[in-house]
Image (cartoon, helix red, strand yellow):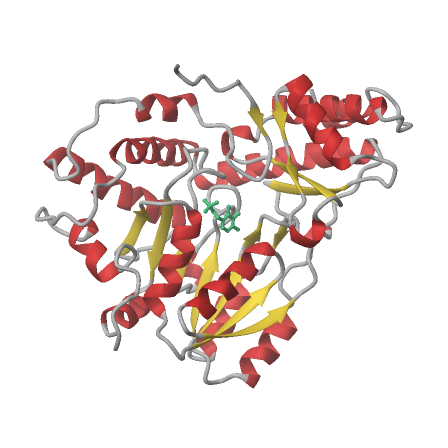
Length: 390
Ligand SMILES: *Cc1c(COP(=O)(O)O)cnc(C)c1O
């Protein structure tokens, strides 16, 4: 029997709702991964990714696997056994960076900032000073597990001033907030397609600076992952019209990515960031009107990922189940040490719009009322509408 998924509104930590134009692109006829027309598409995708990342890096491509593979691509290509890597950790994904370093035989020097906060800059500075022999500094720009945004400009600067590479996770950042790879001076940056790009899951855009490209091409040991070895991948994704088979590219998923990036370019980066910011402000106004608070301090909040403290008396999981069952609305649970303590409301890409904000507020209000929470019915949507001015 065929599988027909229910129609949900996706307001969790990803995937976000996929643009209809993107789904339509996905269903176009499959062609060969070495077809000249497909190679033309690959070159266009590279150009569009350079636009989205704001970089001139030649080594910019979508890895044929999800964000986690983009993360792994950065770590396995840049480091060899014995290398020291400073990992500035403020949530779940920084923990995975540490795991990547350890598994490839490197040594992770971990500096932790409390969850829900931006990476502590003073602590980063002192950790870098204490470990001058470290090869790189890695951090998460947009920590989806907590909703905190870290200062990529300052952190990449610190790394390059110390002669270290910088590795930046902006899986949730790209398209939703400013990502400026060249301005940051970042050396290796990875993202995902199912968050603020509103494309289907399963691809990971990455970009590498000329400096990191040199590190990759002059390794002493081969990259231990055959599939993710960029020295091999570039025979397929590199320059020119002669491309060699490495793996079969996910042809249709790349049509979808091309469409999503084209839409981002049509809207414009600034306009997209502004839209994410506006809808976040409206959501926040509505949540506050219900007596709910975001856990991240205002100056480092991600507009696309809102971590909301669950009130004492409320059954966190039951609210999510009710939202799904009665409203077809998905929001996220807390991860790691925030499990059971927060809801994570995503306003990513296509999902970041006034209708979703109002729907989510009204639905959440309904669920809280049904659990006996005292609140003024209608106040949340009214507060969001006041923010929009209509
Ligand atoms: C979602 C996410 C990832 C992992 O991406 P997948 O596509 O799920 O593999 C990595 N880092 C951050 C910050 C994320 O939000």
